[in-house]
Length: 203
Image 1 (cartoon, helix red, strand yellow):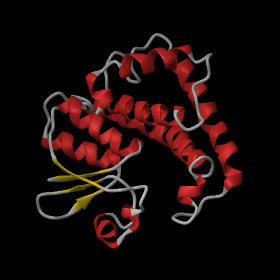
Image 2: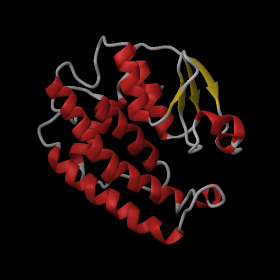
Image 3: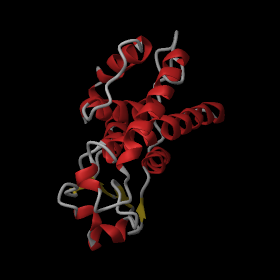
Image 4: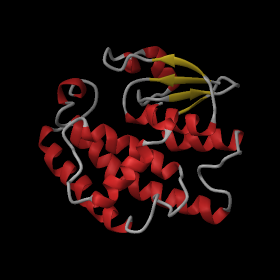
């Protein structure tokens, strides 16, 4: 297998997941700033032109970070990060869906239409007027999640999971591009510190 890597939160999710699992793959860098991900070679790997991508042993490709990580977990089932039982896996997927749809996607849209507009305006449809509203949506649901995190170490209680990795990478990225955490979200701040102290967080 080969992992096609670049800057940005999505590739970091997969890198952090692999670090937690002790997975090492042949890796090829794709220059996102130069638009290499929009050139023919990468479009054959992922027709949407997004990052990252995983080339399988049969020459086919996977994209979408949750799908890539679930595939890697199925191939490397020890130390599961999606869960050890159907119930745990369902819980992880449920929280990942809530986090991705309500927090990470609005964060990403807010960035691409705001600070990232000069980079993305000629690559994908982006509308500057959507930046502020999308950032507010992400903040609303982060505030909601802060309340949900009361008394919990991780998104799924005392069990560190893929959901934590997914959210951590996106919140860390957003904080560097104009979407800092609200000082009142103490549960989220404590969780960020907890996850950020893991060796995998630097992957």
